[in-house]
Image (cartoon, rainbow, N blue to C red; front, top):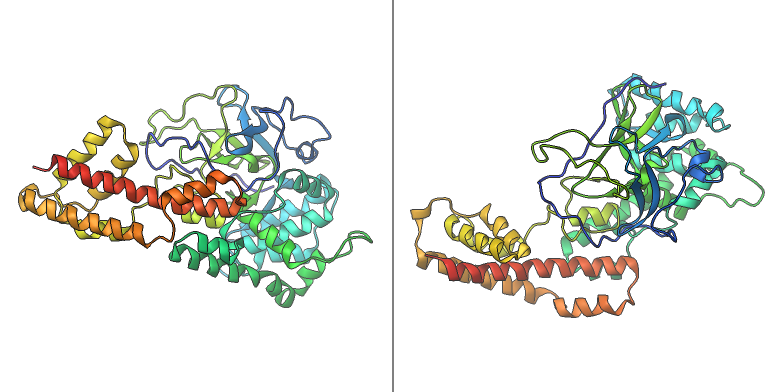
Length: 455
């Protein structure tokens, strides 16, 4: 088994981040009740893989399907999955990659003969451990093979893993145009082109791997397809998580643990257990500067949350995971709106407006004030009221120009969403452009407040 490892933990970037009330997730499976009464049934595909839920149960919540705490003590593992049923690839490959890590991963797949009653073909193991390809591409190959050749993995994938995703790199041209953001559209198009070439690369440069994936499963099994690869690679992006094997960083897809949803205020951490025998999800009992006492002790029905990337803006969340967070603390105001006042508007004027919004309870306008504070002039006597008013006017003109540049208004976007006729990915794209417009509108309220308080 792999040696003892350390756990990678994502932290919330700042205290007091509100929990999102509406997050679109790339989930298609829905349960009929808020909680699942028991996760121990032998008919359950996760249980067939040896997954245990000592302090949680799968269920349905505001984020879609997820995990919910049973209220047990914080030191009871939330989820525990045997390491020798997980999918794993080393992050580092090539001449400088640690051999101990690759050996540890190889030993995990060798153990599948006992844990899953299958022998993983040597070309597959070699590709996963040593091929100088992106880790998500290697993970996609692992998942394709496991779903085709391992009955228990196939049952878990069919029961839990979505059949399709809303990630932006799978979007149509019309959906990307609906973003009304050229930079994000180009980023998605680049990723889309890169992913389209992945399966062809495996078939031409690693034909033994393709043959192993495409090997006879039964008489009715069709050959592996580009669509199957696209699904597997999207799954790798949305469900893989980090851990260490023999001290080396690895990517894992872990049945059971992969049900945990995202928050910028997570309450759990994950990683390979100290004895190397399992991959565990545990309640975070550590203290940080941002959360001096750590998350509060778990209560029954608390959703189990991890962070998919503490610094990810919505563009990256949509690209890789297929959802956006309306309360994402990493969002930024359009730079062109703030540039006219950068290093000119006095910090004391910005601060006064921010305090006023804090008292009024306008959180979004207060957020706009914090954004501007990062670019304000800290020297109070470097300008006067007239200079500040001139900056405010210039920034208002830039904000008005930004809003006018969109093909649709915020009100038109709201009407589209309210009609409920858009597909899930298209809805996400419209929500994204609406959020940008609402941010600019909050910035305009902030500018008006500065005009009131400037001295």
